[in-house]
Length: 136
Image (cartoon, rainbow, N blue to C red; front, side, top):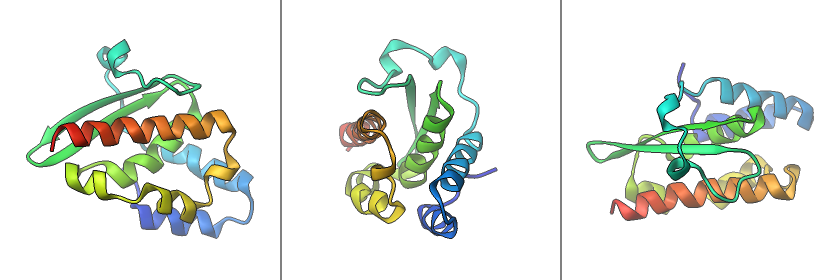
């Protein structure tokens, strides 16, 4: 199954009344992520600055960047789903130009995460944007 779009995620999260339901939805997003090859669980793919282990494997298909991701924490896998909705299967310039702050504000996300999770989320975004910048 495909991940929803950023617009669908914004609409879906707005539908729920409380954050317990929203967290369940986010966890379910993580279950939609494709399997991550065990050979990619390496130190060079590990994102620094995350409380949990997060790995990112970039690939290129024509002009599009495709990211495989994994985490050892179920909520972080869901957050990865939110990030991938914004960045996966996009060109490097689309990734660099995407306003992730506006997206996170529309989700009302960061104030509902612990400071360490919020910092980890920013580290994930920075890593993906740096990969995109390097491929321009």
